[in-house]
Image 1 (cartoon, rainbow, N blue to C red):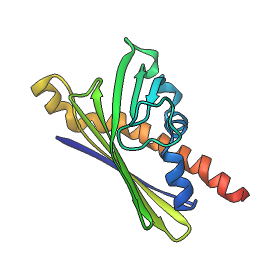
Image 2 (tube, helix red, strand yellow; image 1 turned 120 degrees about the vertical axis):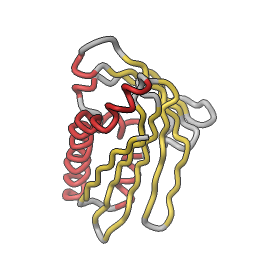
Image 3 (cartoon, helix red, strand yellow; image 1 turned 135 degrees about the vertical axis):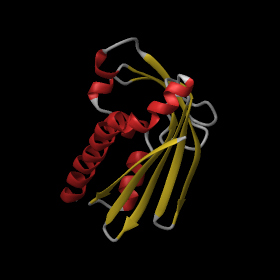
Image 4 (cartoon, rainbow, N blue to C red; image 1 turned 60 degrees about the vertical axis):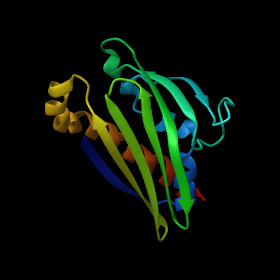
Length: 165
């Protein structure tokens, strides 16, 4: 199994950063246009469409077409865990159907004075058996620009909001 990790400090209160990342709109806002994200549906744990908060049990049905190249790839993920406790929080989504053999994304948030540390940890396995396992460590080449964008966009959206309050 391969792991990718990236952290960012956001100059915004923990509660705001956590709330933003807990929504369908947060996912849309943090996905770069070049990924070609199309969100087909989002269901809450009880099957209700478009829940206000992505609780454990929520399922997202999407597709991506990076750079508009190749066929559109379906991606279904489920929020399998979610917890908030005294200045720290996390949620975990796992890919149920999509382009990876295995994908588990843990989103962690830590309050630090008036800032929030966001940490993304991806555990993944590329498809294609032995060839995918051999190429797995090189996947950071694709992950890094995506997560750099996500972290910069988080700062842009939330730091500017907290400056105007």
